[in-house]
Image (cartoon, rainbow, N blue to C red; front, side):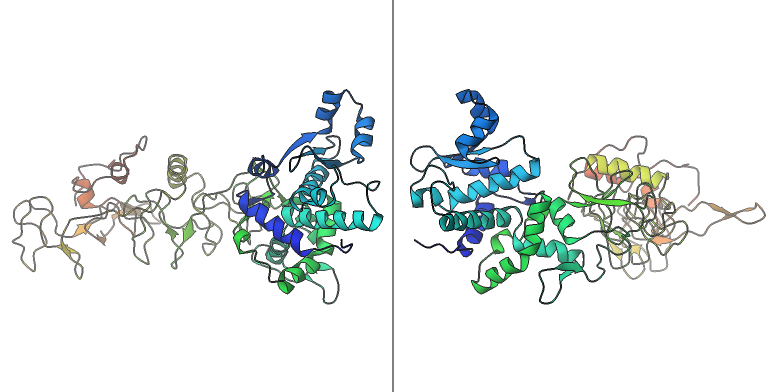
Length: 464
């Protein structure tokens, strides 16, 4: 029998439990662990024991020899974990994890006791088992490397030769945040543990990391467990974009770090190398020119700049600039409403869409080689129109008029587009081929309905 704690095995077992229980997000779902190990133990409250045996809470505490909780052996290899439901939720979470540690580590079987208590064993043995169970609990609820990853994302590093973790640098996550935070508060909220448990986790973080390294403990199976905690706007509850100083929904400047199931976030729609939305947030098109301002399939703007500083580009759903709080170009616009409508009907990951076209053309001139309307193949090199049906051989846009400083209107010059473009990439206006119904509206291709917009709503008398 040894009396010195073995901290290696509790860490290994905690990682195994996380993997076996299918934990994908922190805070750890103890119900998932209960379901996975339902044949080994069940979790019950003190009040259930009180009702079952007609005990008072004080008598229940005396019976279980703990004000917080206990693991009790009920037959060989079967346990009930009791917890005091009068304690705080976060304290209770650690208590349950601690008692699961006793069960998983085989402490009761090893010493043939129905319950771990000071009265039933020597002080040295009792403390050894308690330390091991606590090591299991902190590495189950808050594994060392995941805690370090969270702190590193917030620029928090360990002070040399001390078990102190302090903010040492700004990161992409904390840039322009303007909120105060520390290692203990971040861990407490992100992993849903008590302040006392968070303080212990920070204090023993380097010790556990060293244990991982010294014994080559494999944590790869848990590396993809993500975080539910994030920085949210205190006014509208939108998840903050990394680097944002203002909320992109309401323009607010205050954020709070928390786990909030009721909070909302924008779709994870990105931008390409040319700072255009990729894919298009409405139709899913990913094929457009480097200088395109509009999607050539649905006509949606491909950038959402700040109205104060066009260099500030924002998420397609953003109403306010993340950098300065001013309204964005999409705020209240038809484009913004179309995006909202699209996101309400499409699922995450449904956006990428390839719009296939069978129109043959010369990529050097954008001129079709076969008329898409009458299938005429006899097209002269210098021809601008089909000699059979009169269709333009280059798919130009149908531009509107522009107004000068004196109130005079002038005709705009049409832009050339690819044969399968429904809208002009430069001005967003519909193209000739779209007007003549040679191209299907994007909604029809996707098989969705777009209320009040059939993608072909313009004056048929406008000359091309």
